[in-house]
Length: 97
Image (cartoon, rainbow, N blue to C red; front, side, top):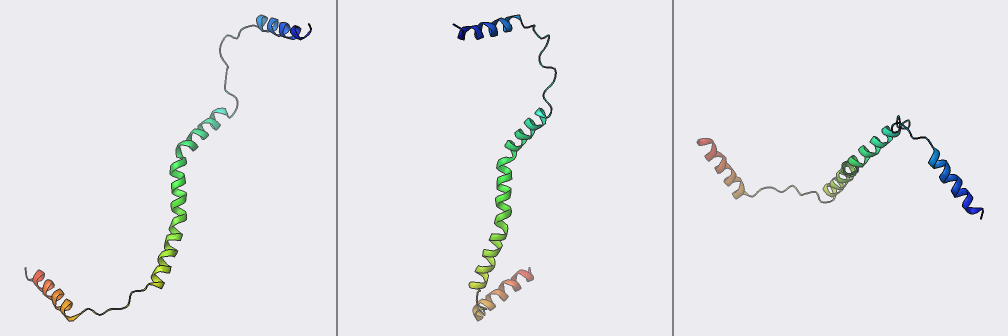
């Protein structure tokens, strides 16, 4: 059969191939840089995601605060006479000590 001849040739070639003295002499160009960049990106991903969400939430929160402040603006209430007398008494007591 001719189909086994390819495997025989391949195994014979592999058996006669000379061995290298050491491992690979150097990494491919840019391999270490890309590998380290991916590790850093994976490590910083959760913090970076929360930072982006926080930056987007600040203007939204400020807009909601302004709308709520304009819609539900508290009325200028004048304090009752009893509250004014009580506050004056507390301040006078605190200053007299």
